Image (cartoon, rainbow, N blue to C red; front, side, top):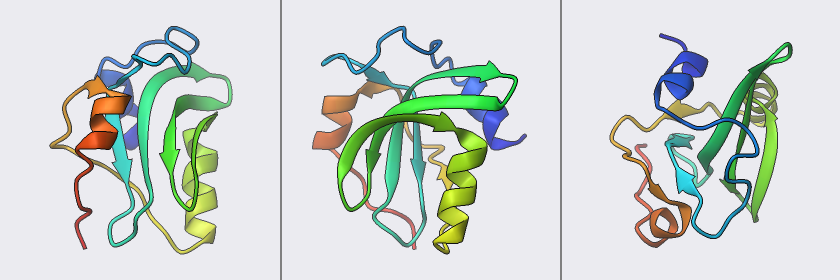
Length: 106
């Protein structure tokens, strides 16, 4: 199963359903093994451009952002990073997720 299917099957709600609310629920956690990069996805929708995700990104800075999964994978690959879905992650509020951030697999 590809990453888009995993995200869609996780039950993540459609775009703009909880857009940046304080109590936004993260349904999927993406990580880049061996780095500090991660993303907590709170919304996603299939479009003609592919799966568009919206979530809280943690890299050098922290920010809410929306983009296609394809673009995200490409941008990270250009930096030498790959991403995977954290299979152990269970849905919880983004604020709670940030309080219990897990280490990344090396």
